[in-house]
Image (cartoon, rainbow, N blue to C red):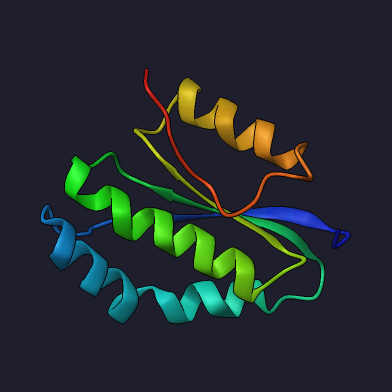
Length: 109
């Protein structure tokens, strides 16, 4: 496991449609995510996304899985949910869960 900190990147402003949101994420946000993953002291990265419909599930799962595989040993997870206690609890759990990576987790208030 990489030593260091867990970073949280909030990704906002994605379109409502799953297909459009995936395209927008890859076009507008992926470079920033890759830059963050290149930091030497990073142990884990959480991408925090707004809640979305089921048409977003597949691209978000693939994103978490593929980023985690490409950037091991840095752990990468995607958490969806409104800002608040439930999302914060998942993010806090991930910080102390060295075996959890490549997951798409949904917070429910």
